Length: 115
Image 1 (cartoon, rainbow, N blue to C red):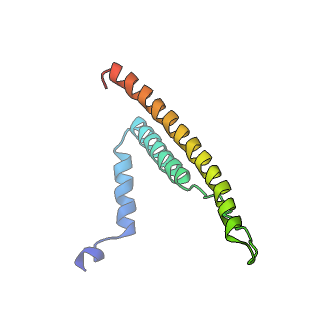
Image 2 (cartoon, helix red, strand yellow; image 1 turned 30 degrees about the horizontal axis):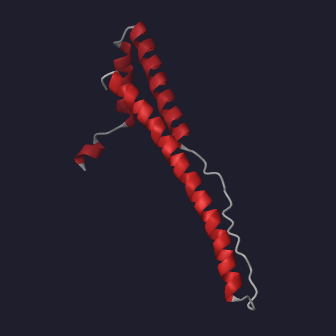
Image 3 (tube, helix red, strand yellow; image 1 turned 120 degrees about the vertical axis):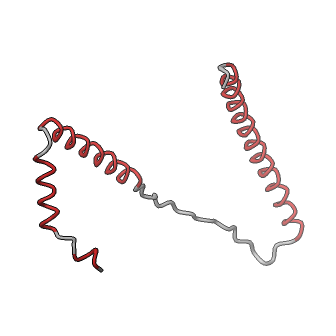
């Protein structure tokens, strides 16, 4: 507790005035410029770090089937759905291969430069 009783705002202001009085004017201007630049960078980082997350609806549609549907109708629908699923998987595989080739080109160009 003895440390806290020695702290005084008036002493701090007096020390600051003595510190500033001992400095030359150009040192004070450069100090203010450096403080402004530092606080500007900090404010920009704080402002940039706050990214609002856009609201995106996640709606899942489900097909409604009658209870009287037969097994043959179910199998026919499964065959139709399987064809769509294979087409989607083929498209995804095509995109994956294309992306892999892009990374391969970048890697080859970096190897060429010795990185």
